View 1 (cartoon, one colour):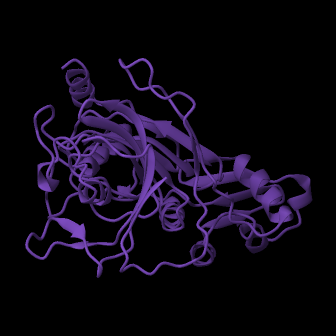
View 2 (cartoon, rainbow, N blue to C red):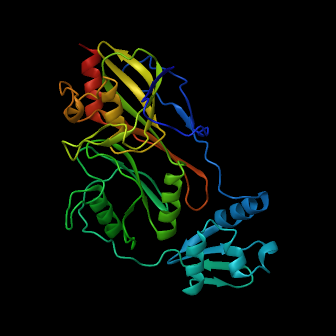
View 3 (cartoon, rainbow, N blue to C red):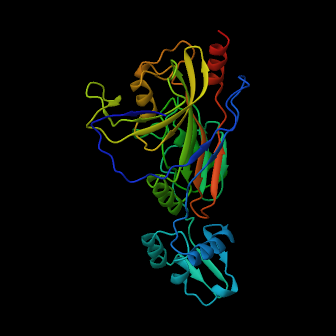
Length: 349
C-alpha cells in the first residue's frame, strides 16, 4: 500500500477503528459504477447487556403522537420510576434532566410519554427548491445535495442554500421544527447531508460525528495515474496564508488522514473511492492535489476543467447509527449527471 506521511506530524500510536470497505466488483462495465458493500464498525454506546436490551425494547416499541413520543412499557418496567426509565434511553443526562424539570416526562403504569417534538421556529428563511430525499423519519432527514448549493447560509437573510430548501420542505409538510444540519459539504461537492429534526437527535448525531460513527464514502475523478491501487495520505491541513478560502498541507495544520482506492484507470484520469479518517475543510481536494492528482474540474487546487466545470467529487454512500434506535441507517446517492458525462467523455476519447 502506498502511504504518504508528512514527517513533521507526530501521531498517536493508538490503533484507530475504521469501517471496512469491500470492493466485490471492480468496474468491468464502464457504463456505470457498480454498487459496493460498505459496513460500519459502529457500536452502540451502552455499557452493559441489560441496558442494551432495555434500550432496544423501549426505543423500538415507541411511536410519535403529536409533540410527544409514547412508549408502551412491557410488564417488567411497570414499577420503574420515570427518572429510572430515562436512564435506559439514549438521552444525554443534561437533556434528560431538563425534560424532567420542564414536566416533559409523563408516566402511568404502562405508558411513558416524552415531549421530544415541541413546536419550533424554522430558524431561517424558507426558499423552495426540489429536494432529493434519501431517508426521513421523525428524528432525521437525509437529503442528496446538488452541486452549486451551500449547505447553510453564511450571512443573515441568505437564500438559495440546502438548509433554506429544507426549511421550505418543513413548512410545506407542516413539520414545525428548527432546521439543523449535522455536517456540511463544499458548495460544489454533491452527496448526502443529514438534518436532525429535533434537539435530542441533533445532540446525538453531532456526538456520533465527533466519535467517527458516521461513515461517508466518496468517489472522485482524479487527474493522472496512481502508482498504487490503494493508499493513505497522512498530512496535516491548515489555512493558506495567501488565500483565505483555500487550504494547504502545512506542518502547523490539523491532523488529516485520507484513504483512497483505485476503481478504474482511464488513460490519464483515475476514478478513485475515498474514505476519511478526519474531516478537515477541503480535505479530499487538498490531499489529492498534494500528491499531484488534483480532482478534475477543481480549479482552486489545480484541476483542469476540460470535462467538468466543478470538482468531480461526490458522496456516494453514508452510514450512521439512528439517533434514537441505534440501528444502522445506510443511504446511497446516485452519481450526478455531470460526473457521468465527464466519465463517458474521458472513456470515449
